[in-house]
Length: 241
Image 1 (spheres, one colour):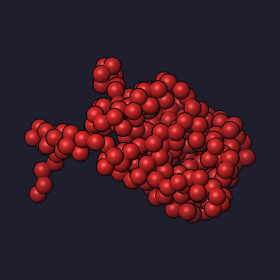
Image 2 (cartoon, helix red, strand yellow):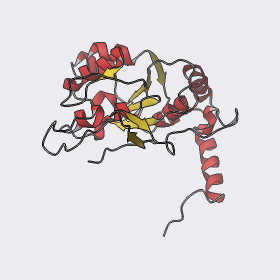
Image 3 (cartoon, helix red, strand yellow):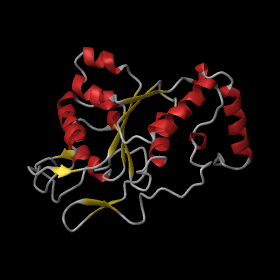
Image 4 (cartoon, helix red, strand yellow):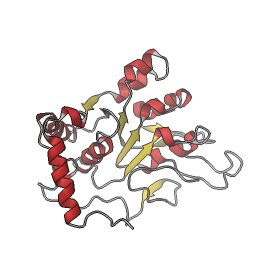
């Protein structure tokens, strides 16, 4: 089964006690100088709107609390999530990114929460889910508004209690991971339409970071074009056949 991960650090092993643990060769954030750690290493621009986002990233990285990133598609939500992780105290831990909209409805519970041997046909061994993979680090849930309603209660339990139960299991498993969620749809409207649990919304919406569209970032289109051209001249782009 292949999970559509859109991030890094899926290199997790199964310890002798059955718990997931990062492999020594994966999951560690590279060392960086203070300048490299700034959000500008991830996003390009100097408009007042983007500089405000940079300030929020610096601030939110210091708090081990859930963050909800909002904004249109293509505004850089995953880049911001990565910056938050790499500037936080969890930077040496795994950074697991999951696109909730890309998970098959029939597999989403097993992929997120894992499963025990014999939980269903084909479950020949215990498998850790993506939430458990993020233990000690950060879990980025992209397109959180697309999570099925019947699974939202299990995610809420994880946010409240810091534990999950694998599919087919009965014993709670403690998981310590910071949750960063992102959406390009208005979640309050989803709550009103009963597509998102209100209690889950408030658990996710502790710190909110809104990303402006490029059209609302005065002057950044030119800066981004210049940066992209420089990257191309430096050979950073793959040559087209």
